[in-house]
Image (cartoon, rainbow, N blue to C red):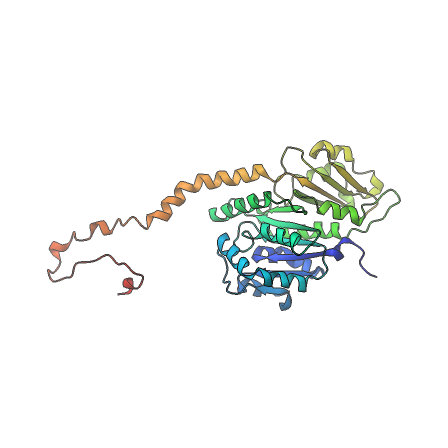
Length: 354
Protein backbone atom coordinates (compact mmCIF):
# COMPACT_ATOMS: atom_id res chain seq x y z
CA UNK A 1 0.00 0.00 0.00
CA UNK A 2 1.49 3.35 -1.03
CA UNK A 3 2.29 6.02 1.54
CA UNK A 4 -0.21 8.87 1.23
CA UNK A 5 1.14 10.91 4.14
CA UNK A 6 3.24 14.08 3.96
CA UNK A 7 6.33 11.92 4.51
CA UNK A 8 6.47 11.00 0.82
CA UNK A 9 7.06 14.66 -0.10
CA UNK A 10 9.90 15.27 2.36
CA UNK A 11 13.66 14.98 2.13
CA UNK A 12 16.50 15.73 4.55
CA UNK A 13 19.83 17.47 4.07
CA UNK A 14 22.12 16.77 7.02
CA UNK A 15 25.03 19.22 7.24
CA UNK A 16 27.99 18.61 9.54
CA UNK A 17 28.39 16.12 12.37
CA UNK A 18 25.48 17.41 14.43
CA UNK A 19 23.18 17.33 11.44
CA UNK A 20 24.28 13.80 10.66
CA UNK A 21 23.41 12.58 14.14
CA UNK A 22 19.95 14.16 14.11
CA UNK A 23 19.14 12.96 10.58
CA UNK A 24 20.26 9.33 10.91
CA UNK A 25 16.96 8.10 12.44
CA UNK A 26 15.06 9.69 9.54
CA UNK A 27 17.36 7.99 7.04
CA UNK A 28 16.79 4.64 8.78
CA UNK A 29 13.03 5.25 8.66
CA UNK A 30 13.11 5.59 4.87
CA UNK A 31 13.20 9.37 4.40
CA UNK A 32 15.42 10.42 1.46
CA UNK A 33 18.49 11.86 3.18
CA UNK A 34 21.78 13.33 1.98
CA UNK A 35 24.66 13.76 4.42
CA UNK A 36 27.07 16.60 3.57
CA UNK A 37 30.22 17.36 5.52
CA UNK A 38 33.55 19.10 5.19
CA UNK A 39 35.17 16.38 7.35
CA UNK A 40 35.58 12.92 5.85
CA UNK A 41 35.97 11.37 9.32
CA UNK A 42 32.52 12.57 10.36
CA UNK A 43 30.96 10.94 7.31
CA UNK A 44 32.90 7.73 7.95
CA UNK A 45 31.44 7.59 11.46
CA UNK A 46 27.92 7.19 9.99
CA UNK A 47 28.21 3.42 9.78
CA UNK A 48 24.52 2.83 9.09
CA UNK A 49 24.41 5.17 6.10
CA UNK A 50 25.06 3.94 2.57
CA UNK A 51 28.12 5.60 1.06
CA UNK A 52 26.17 6.94 -1.92
CA UNK A 53 24.19 9.22 0.42
CA UNK A 54 27.36 10.80 1.82
CA UNK A 55 28.94 13.81 0.15
CA UNK A 56 32.35 15.11 1.18
CA UNK A 57 33.03 18.69 0.11
CA UNK A 58 36.25 18.66 -1.97
CA UNK A 59 39.21 20.09 -0.11
CA UNK A 60 37.38 20.03 3.20
CA UNK A 61 39.17 18.77 6.29
CA UNK A 62 36.64 20.05 8.80
CA UNK A 63 35.80 23.65 9.64
CA UNK A 64 36.90 23.68 13.31
CA UNK A 65 33.99 25.97 14.24
CA UNK A 66 35.04 28.50 11.59
CA UNK A 67 31.88 29.80 9.89
CA UNK A 68 33.89 31.74 7.29
CA UNK A 69 35.68 28.56 6.24
CA UNK A 70 32.33 26.79 5.85
CA UNK A 71 30.92 29.60 3.73
CA UNK A 72 33.96 29.55 1.46
CA UNK A 73 33.87 25.76 0.98
CA UNK A 74 30.18 25.81 0.12
CA UNK A 75 30.59 28.83 -2.15
CA UNK A 76 33.22 27.05 -4.22
CA UNK A 77 31.25 23.79 -4.45
CA UNK A 78 27.63 24.95 -4.40
CA UNK A 79 26.79 23.73 -7.92
CA UNK A 80 27.94 20.22 -7.07
CA UNK A 81 26.04 20.29 -3.77
CA UNK A 82 22.86 21.37 -5.58
CA UNK A 83 23.29 18.55 -8.09
CA UNK A 84 23.77 16.04 -5.27
CA UNK A 85 20.52 17.19 -3.66
CA UNK A 86 18.65 16.89 -6.96
CA UNK A 87 20.05 13.42 -7.60
CA UNK A 88 19.72 11.94 -4.10
CA UNK A 89 16.46 13.68 -3.10
CA UNK A 90 14.48 13.67 -6.36
CA UNK A 91 10.97 15.05 -6.46
CA UNK A 92 10.80 16.31 -2.90
CA UNK A 93 8.57 19.29 -2.11
CA UNK A 94 9.72 19.96 1.45
CA UNK A 95 13.40 20.01 2.39
CA UNK A 96 14.52 19.76 6.00
CA UNK A 97 18.04 21.15 6.50
CA UNK A 98 19.60 19.96 9.75
CA UNK A 99 22.78 21.24 11.37
CA UNK A 100 24.32 22.49 14.59
CA UNK A 101 24.25 26.23 15.22
CA UNK A 102 27.42 26.06 17.30
CA UNK A 103 29.71 24.07 15.01
CA UNK A 104 31.47 25.10 11.85
CA UNK A 105 30.26 23.33 8.73
CA UNK A 106 26.52 23.82 9.26
CA UNK A 107 26.35 27.08 11.19
CA UNK A 108 27.92 29.03 8.38
CA UNK A 109 25.46 27.90 5.70
CA UNK A 110 22.06 27.03 7.20
CA UNK A 111 20.48 30.34 6.24
CA UNK A 112 22.01 30.53 2.76
CA UNK A 113 21.10 26.91 1.98
CA UNK A 114 17.48 27.63 2.86
CA UNK A 115 17.43 30.49 0.37
CA UNK A 116 19.03 28.30 -2.27
CA UNK A 117 16.56 25.47 -1.62
CA UNK A 118 13.51 27.69 -2.05
CA UNK A 119 14.77 29.92 -4.84
CA UNK A 120 16.90 27.51 -6.89
CA UNK A 121 15.71 24.01 -6.02
CA UNK A 122 12.14 25.33 -6.03
CA UNK A 123 10.92 23.35 -3.04
CA UNK A 124 7.64 24.60 -1.56
CA UNK A 125 9.25 25.17 1.83
CA UNK A 126 12.59 24.60 3.51
CA UNK A 127 12.53 23.75 7.20
CA UNK A 128 15.65 24.49 9.25
CA UNK A 129 16.36 22.21 12.19
CA UNK A 130 19.27 23.47 14.26
CA UNK A 131 20.79 22.76 17.65
CA UNK A 132 21.91 25.30 20.26
CA UNK A 133 25.08 24.42 22.19
CA UNK A 134 25.08 23.63 25.89
CA UNK A 135 25.79 26.96 27.58
CA UNK A 136 27.56 25.28 30.52
CA UNK A 137 29.89 22.89 28.73
CA UNK A 138 30.52 24.21 25.22
CA UNK A 139 33.01 26.86 24.20
CA UNK A 140 32.51 30.58 23.83
CA UNK A 141 33.28 30.16 20.14
CA UNK A 142 30.35 27.74 19.82
CA UNK A 143 28.08 30.26 21.54
CA UNK A 144 29.22 33.04 19.21
CA UNK A 145 28.53 30.79 16.21
CA UNK A 146 25.06 30.02 17.50
CA UNK A 147 24.23 33.69 18.04
CA UNK A 148 25.41 34.63 14.55
CA UNK A 149 23.57 31.68 13.00
CA UNK A 150 20.26 32.66 14.60
CA UNK A 151 20.84 36.27 13.54
CA UNK A 152 21.11 35.09 9.92
CA UNK A 153 18.05 32.86 10.23
CA UNK A 154 16.08 35.79 11.63
CA UNK A 155 16.55 37.65 8.33
CA UNK A 156 14.97 34.89 6.22
CA UNK A 157 11.57 35.38 4.61
CA UNK A 158 11.37 32.11 2.66
CA UNK A 159 8.67 29.58 3.54
CA UNK A 160 9.42 26.99 6.19
CA UNK A 161 9.38 26.71 9.96
CA UNK A 162 12.51 26.71 12.13
CA UNK A 163 12.95 24.07 14.81
CA UNK A 164 15.57 24.91 17.44
CA UNK A 165 16.70 22.01 19.61
CA UNK A 166 18.48 23.00 22.82
CA UNK A 167 21.30 20.95 24.30
CA UNK A 168 20.71 22.68 27.65
CA UNK A 169 17.49 20.66 27.95
CA UNK A 170 19.17 17.26 28.20
CA UNK A 171 22.80 16.27 28.79
CA UNK A 172 22.23 13.28 26.52
CA UNK A 173 22.28 14.75 23.01
CA UNK A 174 21.34 11.44 21.41
CA UNK A 175 18.21 11.32 23.57
CA UNK A 176 17.20 14.74 22.21
CA UNK A 177 17.70 13.39 18.68
CA UNK A 178 15.56 10.32 19.39
CA UNK A 179 12.74 12.37 20.85
CA UNK A 180 12.77 14.83 17.97
CA UNK A 181 12.54 12.01 15.45
CA UNK A 182 9.59 10.56 17.35
CA UNK A 183 7.73 13.89 17.29
CA UNK A 184 8.42 14.98 13.71
CA UNK A 185 7.90 11.53 12.23
CA UNK A 186 4.54 11.28 14.02
CA UNK A 187 3.49 14.58 12.43
CA UNK A 188 4.68 13.75 8.91
CA UNK A 189 3.14 10.25 8.97
CA UNK A 190 -0.15 11.25 10.57
CA UNK A 191 -3.00 9.31 8.97
CA UNK A 192 -5.65 9.42 11.69
CA UNK A 193 -9.23 9.61 10.45
CA UNK A 194 -12.38 10.57 12.30
CA UNK A 195 -15.87 11.74 11.43
CA UNK A 196 -15.35 14.41 14.10
CA UNK A 197 -12.62 16.09 12.05
CA UNK A 198 -9.10 15.55 10.73
CA UNK A 199 -5.81 17.35 10.18
CA UNK A 200 -5.26 16.58 6.52
CA UNK A 201 -2.07 16.67 4.47
CA UNK A 202 -2.70 20.14 3.06
CA UNK A 203 -3.07 21.51 6.58
CA UNK A 204 0.14 19.84 7.78
CA UNK A 205 1.94 21.27 4.76
CA UNK A 206 0.61 24.75 5.54
CA UNK A 207 1.76 24.37 9.14
CA UNK A 208 5.33 23.33 8.33
CA UNK A 209 5.59 26.06 5.67
CA UNK A 210 5.02 28.90 8.17
CA UNK A 211 8.13 30.99 8.91
CA UNK A 212 9.10 31.39 12.55
CA UNK A 213 10.01 28.99 15.30
CA UNK A 214 8.07 25.78 15.83
CA UNK A 215 7.76 23.08 18.46
CA UNK A 216 6.20 19.63 18.18
CA UNK A 217 4.82 17.61 21.09
CA UNK A 218 3.55 14.07 21.35
CA UNK A 219 1.68 12.29 24.16
CA UNK A 220 0.46 8.73 24.45
CA UNK A 221 -3.23 8.02 25.07
CA UNK A 222 -2.67 7.50 28.78
CA UNK A 223 -1.15 10.99 29.16
CA UNK A 224 -3.32 12.94 26.74
CA UNK A 225 -4.96 15.66 28.78
CA UNK A 226 -4.85 19.43 28.57
CA UNK A 227 -2.41 20.13 31.39
CA UNK A 228 -0.01 17.40 30.32
CA UNK A 229 0.04 18.86 26.83
CA UNK A 230 0.51 22.43 28.04
CA UNK A 231 3.45 21.29 30.17
CA UNK A 232 5.21 20.08 27.01
CA UNK A 233 5.28 23.65 25.70
CA UNK A 234 7.82 24.55 28.39
CA UNK A 235 9.31 21.23 29.46
CA UNK A 236 10.71 19.89 26.21
CA UNK A 237 13.77 19.55 23.96
CA UNK A 238 13.44 22.95 22.28
CA UNK A 239 14.72 26.46 22.87
CA UNK A 240 12.42 28.20 25.37
CA UNK A 241 9.26 29.91 24.12
CA UNK A 242 9.00 33.65 24.34
CA UNK A 243 6.25 35.04 26.59
CA UNK A 244 4.86 37.33 23.87
CA UNK A 245 2.13 34.84 22.77
CA UNK A 246 3.01 35.31 19.11
CA UNK A 247 1.79 32.31 17.11
CA UNK A 248 0.41 31.64 13.64
CA UNK A 249 -0.84 28.04 13.57
CA UNK A 250 -1.80 25.27 15.94
CA UNK A 251 -2.11 21.74 14.66
CA UNK A 252 -3.67 19.35 17.17
CA UNK A 253 -4.39 15.68 16.61
CA UNK A 254 -6.39 14.42 19.59
CA UNK A 255 -6.99 11.05 21.15
CA UNK A 256 -10.27 10.27 22.90
CA UNK A 257 -12.71 11.91 20.49
CA UNK A 258 -11.63 15.44 21.36
CA UNK A 259 -12.79 15.30 24.97
CA UNK A 260 -9.33 15.37 26.51
CA UNK A 261 -7.69 18.55 25.17
CA UNK A 262 -9.35 21.92 25.70
CA UNK A 263 -8.19 24.14 22.86
CA UNK A 264 -9.23 27.34 24.65
CA UNK A 265 -6.79 26.49 27.46
CA UNK A 266 -4.01 26.19 24.89
CA UNK A 267 -4.94 29.62 23.50
CA UNK A 268 -4.78 31.05 27.00
CA UNK A 269 -1.31 29.61 27.50
CA UNK A 270 0.44 30.37 24.21
CA UNK A 271 -1.77 32.87 22.37
CA UNK A 272 -4.56 32.94 19.81
CA UNK A 273 -3.39 31.67 16.43
CA UNK A 274 -4.33 32.86 12.97
CA UNK A 275 -5.79 29.39 12.41
CA UNK A 276 -6.12 26.03 14.15
CA UNK A 277 -6.35 22.58 12.59
CA UNK A 278 -7.93 19.96 14.83
CA UNK A 279 -8.20 16.20 14.39
CA UNK A 280 -9.67 13.49 16.61
CA UNK A 281 -9.54 9.83 17.59
CA UNK A 282 -5.84 9.29 16.88
CA UNK A 283 -3.53 6.75 18.48
CA UNK A 284 -1.53 9.55 20.14
CA UNK A 285 -1.88 13.27 20.72
CA UNK A 286 0.32 15.32 18.39
CA UNK A 287 0.52 19.09 18.74
CA UNK A 288 2.56 21.49 16.61
CA UNK A 289 2.88 25.23 17.19
CA UNK A 290 4.33 27.33 14.37
CA UNK A 291 4.92 30.99 13.59
CA UNK A 292 6.39 31.51 17.06
CA UNK A 293 8.93 34.20 17.85
CA UNK A 294 12.56 33.18 17.86
CA UNK A 295 13.96 32.52 21.36
CA UNK A 296 15.15 36.06 22.01
CA UNK A 297 15.42 35.63 25.78
CA UNK A 298 17.59 32.55 25.29
CA UNK A 299 19.79 34.35 22.79
CA UNK A 300 20.12 37.30 25.16
CA UNK A 301 21.34 34.83 27.79
CA UNK A 302 23.90 33.47 25.33
CA UNK A 303 25.05 37.00 24.46
CA UNK A 304 25.45 37.80 28.14
CA UNK A 305 27.69 34.75 28.58
CA UNK A 306 29.74 35.79 25.56
CA UNK A 307 30.08 39.36 26.86
CA UNK A 308 31.09 38.17 30.32
CA UNK A 309 33.91 36.10 28.81
CA UNK A 310 35.25 38.79 26.48
CA UNK A 311 37.95 40.19 28.76
CA UNK A 312 39.23 36.74 29.71
CA UNK A 313 39.34 35.64 26.07
CA UNK A 314 41.19 38.78 24.99
CA UNK A 315 43.72 38.31 27.80
CA UNK A 316 44.28 34.67 26.85
CA UNK A 317 44.62 35.43 23.16
CA UNK A 318 47.17 38.21 23.72
CA UNK A 319 49.13 36.59 26.55
CA UNK A 320 51.52 34.75 24.20
CA UNK A 321 52.56 37.98 22.46
CA UNK A 322 53.68 39.84 25.56
CA UNK A 323 57.32 38.69 25.40
CA UNK A 324 57.57 38.75 29.19
CA UNK A 325 60.56 36.39 29.27
CA UNK A 326 62.40 38.00 26.37
CA UNK A 327 62.48 41.26 28.32
CA UNK A 328 65.11 39.64 30.56
CA UNK A 329 67.40 38.46 27.76
CA UNK A 330 70.98 39.58 28.44
CA UNK A 331 70.67 39.73 32.22
CA UNK A 332 73.10 36.85 32.61
CA UNK A 333 75.71 38.01 30.13
CA UNK A 334 78.16 38.83 32.92
CA UNK A 335 78.28 35.22 34.13
CA UNK A 336 78.25 33.51 30.72
CA UNK A 337 81.32 32.91 28.56
CA UNK A 338 82.23 36.07 26.66
CA UNK A 339 82.42 34.21 23.37
CA UNK A 340 78.76 33.11 23.53
CA UNK A 341 76.83 34.77 20.67
CA UNK A 342 74.12 37.18 21.73
CA UNK A 343 70.62 35.65 21.65
CA UNK A 344 68.47 37.10 18.88
CA UNK A 345 64.73 37.07 18.55
CA UNK A 346 63.52 34.30 16.26
CA UNK A 347 61.60 35.56 13.28
CA UNK A 348 60.45 32.49 11.35
CA UNK A 349 58.76 29.21 12.21
CA UNK A 350 61.79 27.10 11.31
CA UNK A 351 64.24 29.28 13.23
CA UNK A 352 62.86 27.76 16.43
CA UNK A 353 64.13 24.34 15.33
CA UNK A 354 67.75 25.47 15.32
